[in-house]
Image (tube, rainbow, N blue to C red; front, side, top):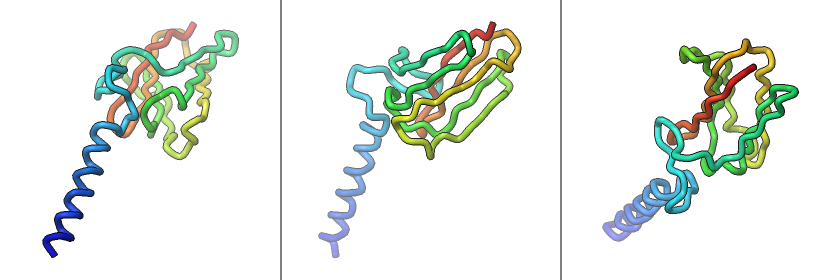
Length: 122
């Protein structure tokens, strides 16, 4: 019985440590994911200025996304969508053409933190 309990504890600890060290899939020395954002901007984020559409390449983000939100400069949520069921290689399109000119923040929520990108709508 003690041997089985020891084996279970080993696998439990191995699973927890791999999640703590590799949950986001980040290599040592790369950008770090924090509750306030990411240190640097290594994920692919493109804009089609003509159509005012932002393209977010999920495959380039080294974490699993759960939600995307758009906030105005006051912090009010204007748009929010769960994306945890989308493929990890998806390219997400966020159309901001219907919003008034001003500063906005796109938040990419992961299961361990939030990636942020400030944008200007003209």
